[in-house]
Length: 228
Image (cartoon, rainbow, N blue to C red):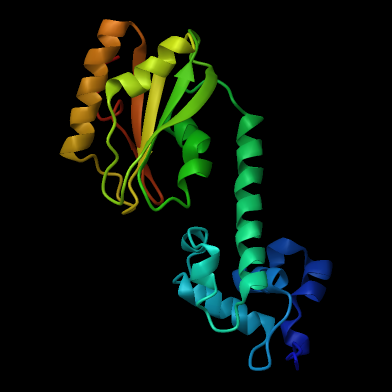
């Protein structure tokens, strides 16, 4: 099969060697993962088609699976697997970086950094509990529930049961809104109130409930829903 060669202006490998990865565009970086073009299109052209499929949003691309990418003309199983594998590796690298910085949760920003690698490419709602010791240092975290596009069901026992078994002194919970808007819904506030009531009975403090959107978040503690 004849492969279309890249013209001099479309050789991201040479550009990477001389300018470094920060000097490459998203399509150029993706072209390096795709490696080869087809008879009709260069690797850059295929990369642009993949980004167009994701509406030019790399975050949206991270949600795609192999079969979805294979629907793009010129992207076969090998290229689709390479793209998905590269995105998965980037998520794992982010996870390892967060593990090295586990410490005291002092703000909603800290919570978002800790859960973002789980939520950033997720199309469904994830509800995560973070278990803390008496000094509010992070001991562990756990995905409590996986819901649908609109909501995730969660019961207080699913949060505080693991907290008691792990000997946690406090808990922070977080979930994402796949819509990208972190505004608390009436259901979010109702869940928070149930968790507050249960925390008082069980004796494990609920520190915060953070809702993660696309580019921002809402802390229900900062909003006044969770008392000090």
